[in-house]
Image 1 (spheres, helix red, strand yellow):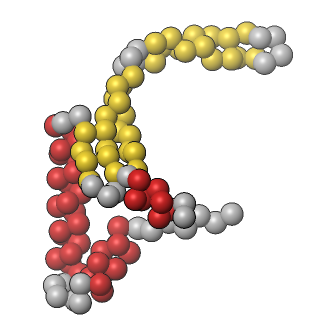
Image 2 (cartoon, one colour):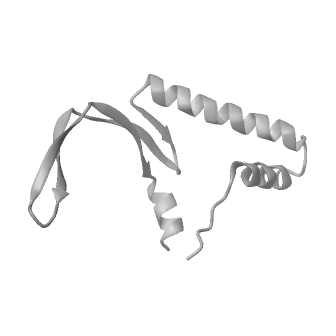
Image 3 (cartoon, rainbow, N blue to C red):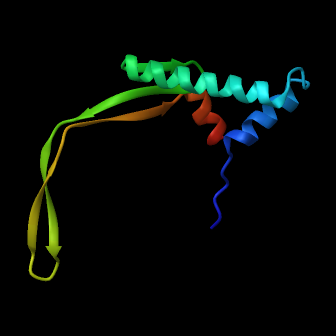
Length: 103
């Protein structure tokens, strides 16, 4: 099954066409990059970034722990691996977006 993937270039092109071609594609590309960089900065600085009608980006911290990894399913042997503390960025979509995706 082939996945339908939209790239940043396609989004910038769509934005350019829908805006009535007021500015150049390069300008819209720079604006998109600025927006992306601001979002990244704000996610790093704070714990959550809300975009009304779109969703929430938030950081989730995971504590360090020991994970059991199975070496051999037949004998039941396993080894332990240390997993360090880390932080991941999560996204929770807004109700409006969920309804558009799943009508």
